[in-house]
Amino acid sequence: MVALSVAALVAAVGGAGNLFDMKYIIGVLAIVLGTVLIIKTEWFVQNFGPSAWAEEHMGTSGGSRLLYKLIGLAIIFIAMLGITGMLGNVILGTFGKLFGL
Image (tube, rainbow, N blue to C red; front, side, top):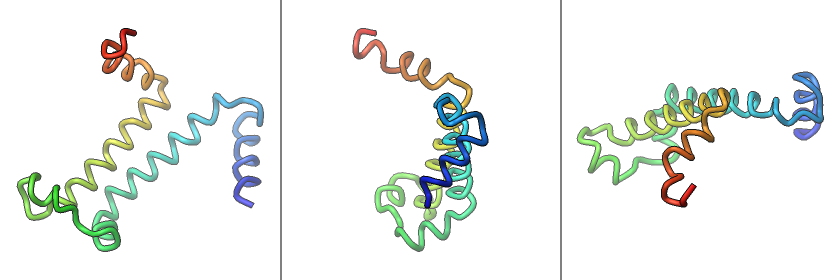
């Protein structure tokens, strides 16, 4: 059922054979996930628990909440880089010299 829905969504966006459009769908889904992570931080803390590392190193009593918000912001930033086509260049620019690229 889910595969059928994804196939229908891909077909509606620009054709089932064009995987280039999938970066937009995945990017929008990642932005929604990051936004939910930022807005519903308290729900995530209650259901997944606080992070002892974040509470110790983030400098506030709400270190876990700050960590969840930063993770959500990072997801949004990486998704935007992926949608615009800049993600590959950023990864190569950051890690390319480590691997001789």
